[in-house]
Image (cartoon, rainbow, N blue to C red; front, side, top):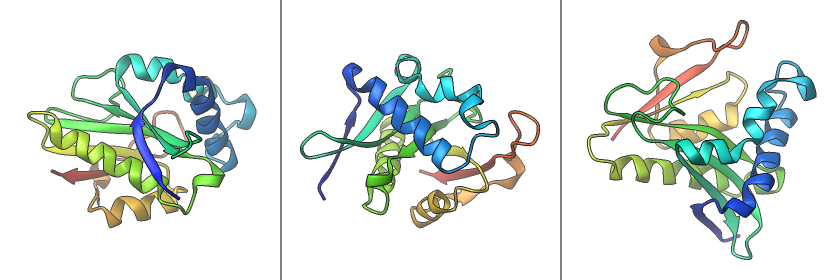
Length: 166
């Protein structure tokens, strides 16, 4: 399957928001399931696009497979990025896109974007311990665990961190 990585179109925000929400729900990543307050943030693709760049993985005929938010230094989307660091967040791939390279293609696109931003020396991310498939992608692409930066945005939600020197 040919996968195209490009910036999300405003008309796709609703679809991508639902793909993101369903990916997190389906993987059991939300503490309160359908009642989790984070679902609104996952569905708010327009908000992410206002504060960063939203990339999508699509088939050659335009079907969305997933997406990710890329945050340059200083973006309000940055949770852990410090000076000289970019960050990506909310990587999600629909079931039909899993195992076909969509997630890896999105991460590679974030790496390329980070390299293109003057002064960025590292790309960072946070992930849950349960996202084992994503961890494999990160490690295959050269990301290294940074346990000293691990954090909990809310009680009982530990997040692991990774970084890639550019």
